[in-house]
Image (tube, rainbow, N blue to C red; front, side, top):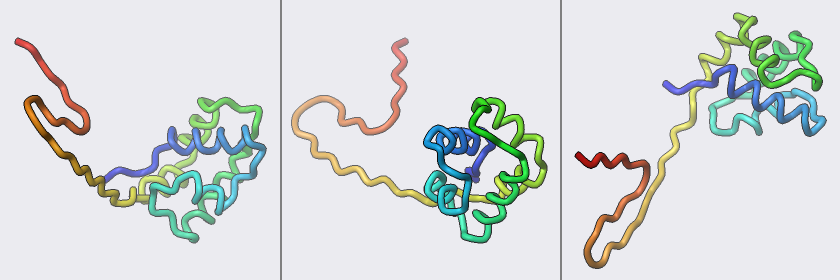
Length: 109
């Protein structure tokens, strides 16, 4: 299961600080919109983050280290699943050659 990591969260927090925004429930939900973040979890996460005394003078790495020092935050983040996202690709192919979508690795012997 793909879950939120401290690195993803520290990047979001760093971006909020750059925009002079507070770490709150709604901002967390916006920043982590690809994850299933209920109001209850967002509120709890916001409260725990505010206990860490994070500030705009900190680098993204310093924020990440601070997040990793909190077992409560680690536990909360590991329980937040990513939303199921389905990507649909419609392609039409006429003629010769390959019709490729997505990542591809080609190895020539």
